Image (cartoon, rainbow, N blue to C red; front, top):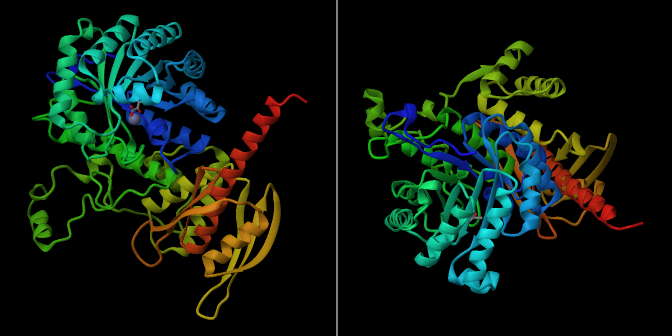
Length: 526
Ligand code: KIV
Ligand code: ZN
């Protein structure tokens, strides 16, 4: 299936497709791994937000990846669902199996085309690579009509060879051609020129949509992406919050708002509902525990804050003195006091709807109980508090360990002591431990209850809102055998949030071990 990128009802502004790869290139970076449920949650928000193509994962990578791509494909309402595959028939067939159930499936297949990658990574001659391009695209087209081909390390590929590969891929049936800046090396002028020249030199270039895919190693990913569009590309590959390999990918929210705000010089239009950008950003930050830097464009905490007296004075006289877009246009509401301890079920359900959540009955009851508990302890409950609470609740819904009770003795006297009760597969177990500080004591208690050898790779605390009674949002990352698992917890008590975050990360780690174990026993004949 092809997607219309013509002028259509948008007048002179050409439609640019947004291809989100948060769940593939984003999730691939160390520490950003998400659970099955978290991936479904992110995909749902991307679909609702108007993303044209969601790259849901790399199905051959693991059974877990396969299942999440397949479930996202099954659930997607509007978006094309793409899976990634190398130029290998087993990869492509597995990918086809995963995306087949989508209303609009896509196979995205790639191979390196630069001299350095062909020689050292693939150890293949250029002619063999060219043949692999033809074979892989042909194979993918035997499964689906919508096939994207990528020239990995495209910006460091010899021009003539790149053109031969692009022409061959289109001839074999590729409907989208992606020329990635895999190593974040190009510059805007260079990237514009590359797209113009390739489109001019390749005789069948009008039969495919061209795509940009930029990494941010030199901090130019967004500028390069927009420059590629100037050169004729009509699909942009990007991620929420710019997460991705090394310095990350081009940030979706920056691309969308640049096009919207500077439409005078960027005469394009996307299908993204920009008021959902903040929601998507918060969700991805929460499930990956990759915090958004305070001064990050569009979605950073300070992106719309005006601190200096001169700026505040200007803003009071006319908002456009210092504001090029409104906070509301990206989904930042003026901090709103939502509800207090007297708010009932109905008001809470309405608030969840307004914030974009739809919970099942049981999840709603649990969330409402936690909201009441929070409202009892915290004077002012803000939207951000509810979002932190629900995001944690959804993420931890399938956890094997849950924190039931925690008492901590802290202070100057030492040693600090924690008494922790966990619900462990439906059974309650309690342990008392000491440590070098209260957090260490809590983590030692968890280790005593659930022995494991994972190392603590990250412990991070952030306040959800302002004030000393603000909720703490804690992220914990555990590392074992080269794999990383991130958990988060939110509570006005930082120590309770810490215990929840650790239990959440450990539950993910154990779930992964169980899956590997059952895969192994299935693969090993009795
Ligand atoms: O950066 C890259 O080259 C990629 C390809 C697989 C598209 O992510
Ligand atoms: Zn990439």
